Image (tube, rainbow, N blue to C red; front, top):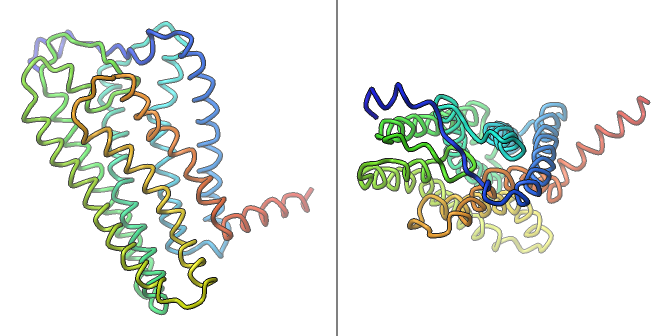
Length: 311
């Protein structure tokens, strides 16, 4: 973006669903409810993982990181979205758009890598049970989480710089509900083929490298589990991985569709896909882990029972 364009450019108009006022009202109510449940569910996971000594394990360390990610991710998008849905002003400042893209993209990229680390943890738990505590020692867990955050935000910094150095030629109407890479690219008034190729290449690495690790880990897990003669033992082993695999399928499926598909003719379809992985998935993650996990349900009952006794 040239200097004259930068100084005169003040912000973006987020069109979102402004062409459907009735849909905006419904979305406002639904998304507000989803956001409240997201805050409550993910906060509960973090608090339980800290307070219950039985949950001081690598699995719940990574799960706490995931819950914190989801809290920050939705908070970087939903409050602004709710304001735009109910207000006449649909704008976001230029600086606000930069910050929103950087934070949301950084958190999303971090989650991609973190889910891969969680798959390795499940592999170690099932395939290397006797050496699990030695392999997944606290230093390694912190290192894996730190690397996930570092790579995620390094990728976000690169993508954000590449996007906002493109000349927009005064275009400021963003046909989306938040600042995201694909719709921002469409505002550029120059050929973006090189940018799209770079984004596609980086997205493939960020998305498919963890997926490859996940597939490898679960391939080994299945081989180990099938050797277990006890049906109860097989169920327990698969149960420790089922929640994670469900979350992985939901998150990667929608993210891959959004970032690696050819340009869609249905902009509304792209918006609803983005709504799913930015808002719906972070809300249902705690439900998936709590409903399928006896340890978390036990810790929650214990904490609630203590509060009841105290009263």
